Length: 245
Image (cartoon, rainbow, N blue to C red):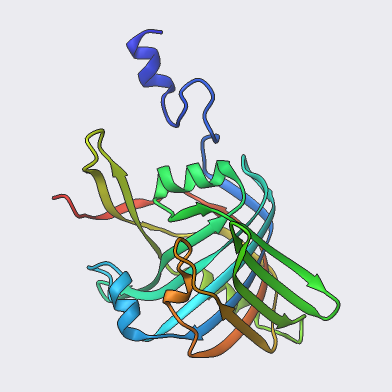
């Protein structure tokens, strides 16, 4: 293979059979269960990197079913998102993500810097309850429950909440172990259609685990539960801060 061919074809690992296709990526019937809760402000400040700022002790624990995803197939994801500001602009910082599919783990980490680890999340309806579970190596580390479609929400308000900037800390090591890439990445969801949105009574419990430390951001009080059904596109992002410069 000529050097020009390598340069032309290289966009993901491995070169001859990339773990994922080129983006952007379209998601159909992407379903969210989001538990918003009050946590410990000092602990949030420990994990949110500057120049992002956190002012309120709020965390959003998400369970996401993605049955129809471009290049990624059918998978489930779970994790914690923290409301932040960047240069006075309100957004969210993606703190931790756990999912059950290799392709979106590889793409998420390599392209944007999503903090993804392999685990076993699930989201399903059992009788009148929407249930989200996160198991990490056979240990249940998170359990969320919500009354199924108790009250319909205003779709325009929900759409507005999904259109805020998302921030990620992308880290890629050099061959000598030092950080070769250490960047703050920003992206916005695109072509979002809210097909349904509901609220209901909700609870969340977190269990300490050495390698899936979701309980490091403890639940002080559950504020709300939201159930959302959407179609959306995940585009490429942009670097807004380079920690190595």
